[in-house]
Image (cartoon, rainbow, N blue to C red; front, side, top):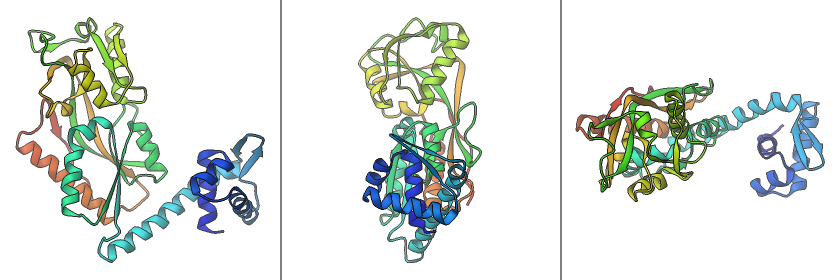
Length: 313
């Protein structure tokens, strides 16, 4: 059994296609097929069922897959550890974050970290929280700054709460205020055209659940798009949107109106519980917490944002 065979099997399990897995690994399909067959021969059981147009995992394949992912992740950890011993000249931190957090604070954190550790390569992945959690479990990213859904995330992840953040209504600053009281209810919000992000955003689900809890139906102006597109649509006067308070910083064309009763979300730092994080990843966590602490102390947050925790080493 070789690590290369395990890598081929994991790629095949992810793509469920010999052609697609071979393309993703940039190897010939016969090579991939031979290596997977050799792994099956070594283990004494078929790992995949080969049917026309589809590949499915056998019960043995289902059992082997998480172990193979762990072995490949450990191999990567060894490489990172050796790179750090020679001075972090080849270090890497793969960060995942939701689009609203990229807009709100992470861009500044990435800048500060790069200035301090220019030899460490930074890779950024934007996605919804559930997809980021999946990427962590597949070892596609090292850490993720995400929102914690009401139902929680996978038990294989370790979460460190970072922020408690209020959700507010964004409207164009050039127009009339949505209310003269400085706050509004969801029922009042339902009278206005609403802009919501694409499916897969936790923020979309929270917003629609708030409407359902209030017994009202949203009047959609535009559905879909990333967070930056939602904010631009609001600035243009297309409608209003429920967004986290962090995104109002540096957006003078947006007016913030609080919701009453309030809606909050928890922002956390997530990582795999079964992996020891590298010094480079720990340095990034420290930079992130330092930045959040300094921003809070300087009163730099817009709206209702509270710093919660400190990642452990």
